[in-house]
Image (cartoon, rainbow, N blue to C red; front, side, top):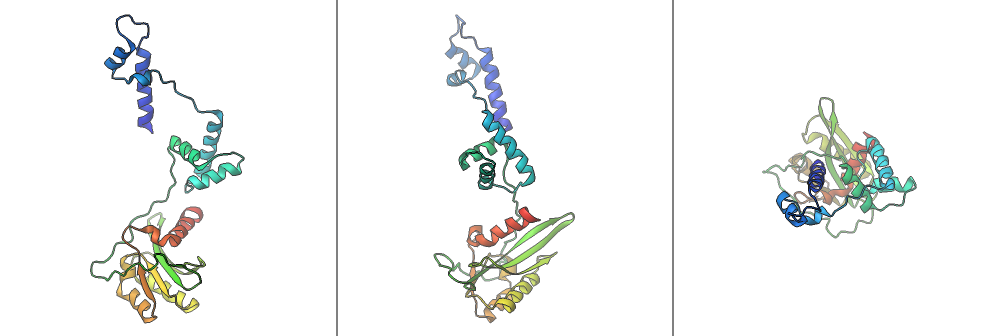
Length: 242
């Protein structure tokens, strides 16, 4: 953003140095000497409208309150404030301001080279009832000194959180405990989907699934959207609540 502003300022300064009344050098020649595209010499910057400035002020205030809001949430916010605006225009205003939704995530899904990776079973599958598909994932909660790690078991159909655990390490134990708790309370699903993290490919975790005759499904590498429901849960928990 700063680089673009500097470029516009440089073009303005070069344009002011040119002289349309010069008898020896034409505007084309002057622009060539200064390394300025001739079409930009004729360009008149268009100032932001009062409406855009007002909406940008509102976006700035709301961003300080909810930095996790993306284009869609910001568009909804402006519409609720009484402004007729589309998501594309909201995106343009946010880019002008250099604002971007904040939801960082470290890589917690590295597979262990010796553990078995199972195929993804949910492609084109219609999920029509509870306990048909469960999923799980791990995220981190940033603390003043380090991280706490949170695992949740979620039912794909109802989006209900069936079990969860917090841990200060990334061992598989707390994932196994959450899984056993969910099974004890709600029975067993037909399919259980996770990423390829070492906790979910560990023998301890896999044994619980195999013992209960649960089909095992795993996301492809780098495909976070294969587990989109639990990923959306993390965004709600971490950036809207925590």
